[in-house]
Image 1 (cartoon, rainbow, N blue to C red):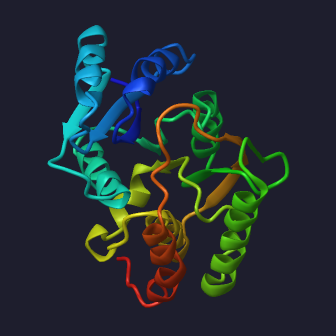
Image 2 (image 1 turned 180 degrees about the vertical axis):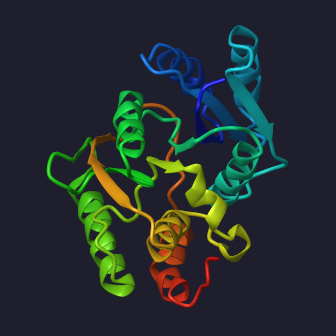
Image 3 (image 1 turned 90 degrees about the vertical axis):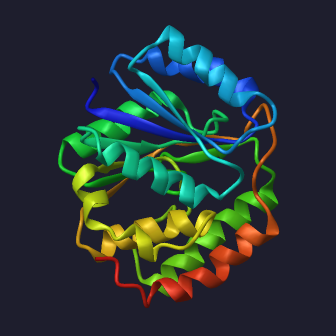
Length: 237
C-alpha cells in the first residue's frame, strides 16, 4: 500500500476516468486513488469499477446516493482514508484542470516539513490557462476578499489541489464544517491555519477542463462570499 491517497470526487466524469487512472498509475511515485461518486447517471462508477479490476488494491470507489456536495464528498474521503494507514491525503479534480504530475511537488513539500501544501495559481510561477479574463479576475479577487476577512496570507484561498499530512485532518472537527462548495476549500485552509499547522503554496498551472461540464453555480459562489464571515466564529478542534 502507498503512503499516499488521492481523493477524487466525481459526478458525470465518464470521459476522464480512464485517462486519469492511466496517468496516475504511470507517475514515478505510487499513489492510491479513492473516487467518491455521487450516483453519476453517465456510467462514471462503472468505468471506475473496470479500472479497479485492472489495478486491485490501488483504486477504490465509494458510491453515494446522489449529489451531496463537494465538501461532504471530501469529508467522506478523509474519514475513509484516516481509517487506513495513509500519511499523505490529497484532493484533486477529475477534469485535468490539475496536472497529476504536480502531485509529486505537493508530496515532496509535505514530506519536507509542511503540513498542508496547496497547488496555487496566484503565487510566483503559478498561472491559469484557457479561462476567460472575467473568471480569472473573479477568482483572484475572491481570494483577496477572503484574505482580508480571515486575515490569512494564503494567496489561492479557493484552491482545490492540496496535500494534507494525516495529523492535520485528525485535528479538525469535521462536524463543524458545513460548507459544500468553494467555501469548504476556504474553510479547510482556515482551520489548518487556526490550528497552527505549517502551510506552503506550490505554483501550478491550472487548465480549464476539456471534457464534461463545470460544477460552478451562483449558489456555490454565494456560499463562499457569505460563508467566510461564519468561519471566523468556528472552533475547529
